[in-house]
Image 1 (tube, rainbow, N blue to C red):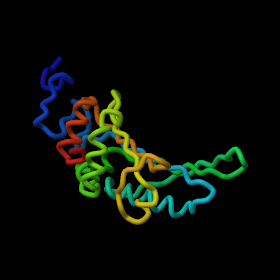
Image 2: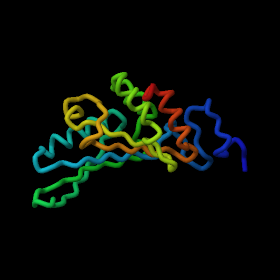
Image 3: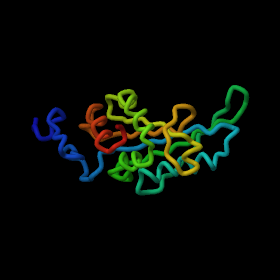
Length: 172
């Protein structure tokens, strides 16, 4: 095994180190997935607009939104809106861009909870307020959020992802 490319020997001073055979790019992301539930009491177009706003923060391209329809217990229509982007569509500094739009108190909140937002498979999970996103602001929210999952390329374990979050200013 080549120590320069081994997971154990990744040089943390190199911001976005990729594995051999992967396409050359300067992003640590493999993909992004956003999803949100639009309830019968919500305007679907406004929920889609809020989702597109968050996509514009992290993406170079416009994403297609998909809708899945379901019926609630009381017969109400529930729509799940989602979008998936490949890593090449994401801006390399997406975490920094998100960080610039969060308040210091939100970064502190995320800092206290960051270990639960990252998994061993190289995913970072964030939740954003639908109403604030519709109004053009980025605000963390745990209630009925727009969920964002950023999947990192091979070699980014949970510790490395947390370090990147700190370096980008996403957490204090």
